[in-house]
Image (tube, rainbow, N blue to C red; front, side, top):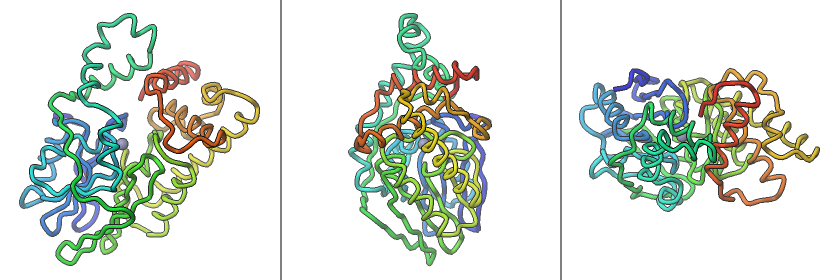
Length: 326
Ligand SMILES: [Zn+2]
């Protein structure tokens, strides 16, 4: 059991489970407790998923038969198997992407091997640092990919005993499958990884333009409460701060790009500013690299070398003289 997970009621029928450490893999889950209940995102490993279920079970009358995955990343889908027989709903791209983005067995193997591989430390210090950090909180044993079964393209609507729930596709901005869930009657948006709150966003597939569109859409829905993919629950300031961060990084990246710096050197040079207070600020590198990919007219789904990415974040943290954290 982790002490760093808590349940929070955010409206009459909506709840959140928030992973308060707010490092990589510490994703949040949601519950709309109407019409048999809908769970939104299922945590990174089985222990966290079981704890989330135990917390939500204090308010639901039975295990929900519906799950929504806001996108394909492991930290949002690797607890799916505990919802046996559930209808799992996601954007059409998600099942194929889930098979591509990460393999829980490989990651578990990596966690076992990092501590006892001195050559790996020299080759990939970022992989070792990330592996040691993940091993503090996570165990990826026993995870089976359970893919979404109900797929949609643009919008999908549920009616839970008179409470409408709107699933709106906003990707690709942070990943291919990005979906937000709006519960208009209760003024709640579950934003998935469109919004990282008080931690530095890590985006994989998508464009800045789409990300801004998605954030503007959340603003236009005028929610009272936003359950973010990572970090604390927020009001509208969660969206505006996220947008300001992305605008800042893209503008600073452009100056560095025009000056001929590499994305790694740019990330070392760009000031964290107020965002140095956010968790894992050296993840800035990924946002700079994404901007560079756009300046070079590369496609939004250009693949990432994950080892090189974790190493680059490590180097940025070292260059800035801060703790290496993911
Ligand atoms: Zn996430």
